[in-house]
Length: 218
Image 1 (cartoon, helix red, strand yellow):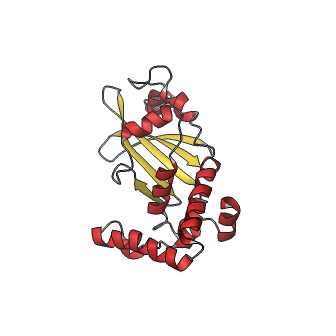
Image 2 (spheres, one colour):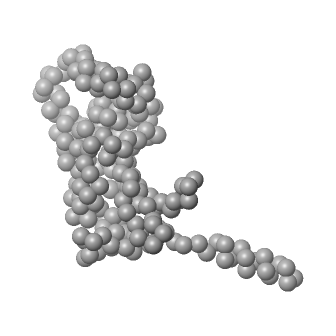
């Protein structure tokens, strides 16, 4: 019985680790002392499909708190504006639009050896369907040994494919933190560039159907 009690106590102690998610959510940024990180990020109006938080430890023992935001309805008007611009510029000529996308997307990836360029699948169909597919935003915070934390990664994803927005020079950490804390939304230009980059490599089955895209965009 004594050994059993000791084992149970040991299990309880082991299971009571630091709640890194709460540490980040209850924290504040130096430039935004009027509200906590959690309140601002949970209330970000861009995330109409909800948000999730999770904490994990990397192989080298670094503690990460990850915030995920799912975007669908809140990007619809911008997506429709982009679609309208495409229609006006190419006047329904899908072949000319496909050539433009290949020349500016896949060909550029090949030149700079970006990603797995031989699998580039950018054309008018995949691009327009991507506009109507749910967009995921990921923001990671690294928790330091002194219990402070800092933004360490910001990405945009669709289905199983994700890009590092900072590496692609689509804004800085400060840009995105300011956007969330001020409850602003992504610009139409930013959304266009994200979808342009994502549509090239998202598996076809992870994009919405052509009919669903038509209903969303028109």
